[in-house]
Image 1: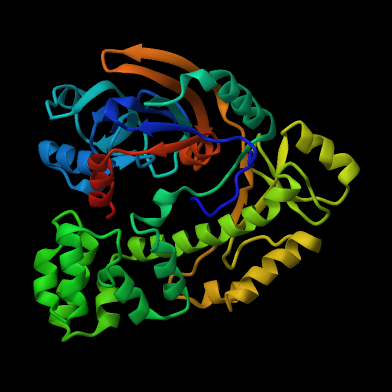
Image 2: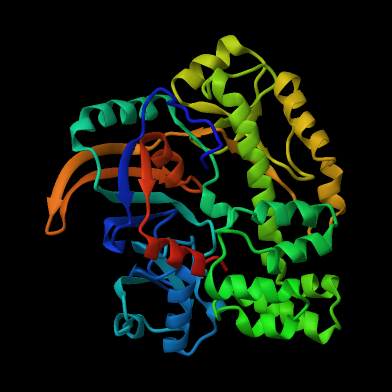
Length: 418
């Protein structure tokens, strides 16, 4: 997210390499609620290493002889990392889960519960990140900057991974919500950029030349959405709208969600210079203890609560059921919609019927700490923190570090775009 402003513009980010090995990035899920120990659903705590959540779900479903859809999980976790997350499956004995022997996976714990684990049913995530080839002499500076973020909060940007490896899923979403379906399909399947390489670039070039069957064969197997759309395109005689309709509704909704995220980031960026702890009359404030939202009417009452980090101003996830602020914040959000030639009714009239919502403009990292460490691969800076659900570690990292990922890590991320 290099184009978005930082909260700490005067702090020179520390150089380093992240994800030099997937064991350098540990993520542990914090459940929303404990399983009650009874019921038809078996909950299991899965540790996976160097695998995406979708890959792990597919392998487990195959081993248990169940459908992928039968495996419940609360959140998607990084592929190039060691992650621990809860999953669920119904009518499978816990002993069968404990006996699983799959590459780069192990079941750490099992229990039972009365319902399937659903996406979003988590409180947050804990992180332990090792940053190598860095600047250990700047440890004290880093600790001071991290303490500032703990006091003031981190800009709650949606991370770059929200927008795909090309950074353009929001453009697909914008075309989708505007009804520009041919534009959306061209972005999904064609128009190669410098971010496209190998088989993916070749597949996009074939699509742009109108060779749809050849493009379908060229896309790597992991890219199910693209292959699905191209198959429909071949069957329907090159009709792009039919190809778009063949894409799963959840994926089409994801594109629009990426557009909502892009617009939220723009609103956040405009509020940042004045301070994300500064409230305005007419703001919709977020109560961190409960997630409730309320109108700010009396700054003398509410600003001290923001100073104590009890509440924060919010930004829009535009949709027809989204609550709207008044005053200056409401005017700024209305200007963004007008610039995009949209109204909230556009989201209601669209076949996907996008409801929308509010999101706090900042978050407070839990128990943040940065220390020096060393192992058999050399010295590193160890960064630890916990984040609420829906917040991105990259938003915190970009305030402190100028990080590089190894080329093989970038290739893996590209392969996981679907």
